[in-house]
Image (tube, rainbow, N blue to C red):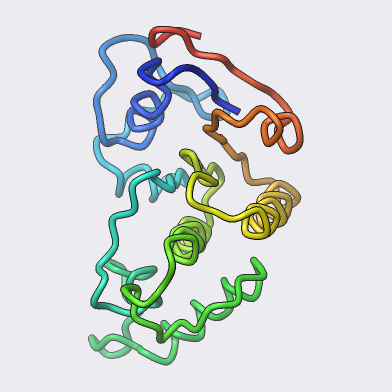
Length: 185
């Protein structure tokens, strides 16, 4: 878990890890190796995915298109729609997410859109998934589903960085806690 007051730098630190921002000082290491991602694509290509607090989706496109945006599966130079929908359904099944991959994102609730972003992160076969305030828009039932997904990812060996202000969640699902104060921990 990564905790701290508003303005402490939690999201900023994670955006440095994810290649959105450049760090001013210090270094980031993954499995003992120093990394410095120049952009989010580089982070994703190296097994780091981030589910941002503010969702940034293409609302007029469907769920599967949002998950595979920028990396559509192709066959003979043409988008392989069957593979795209099959792969989306497989990720949903693995995570226990009950959504239709053909549904337009604009027709989903905020919590369903959050689940799409989590599935997208998982679709990259990420070794590290950053969840920035993932329960802020979820009902208690949806939070429980999210925790099941987190446990599945942990059992697969995926590292989770969980940013939250909610102590009961932190104590329930996190193995370690780092508290940030004024951008330092």
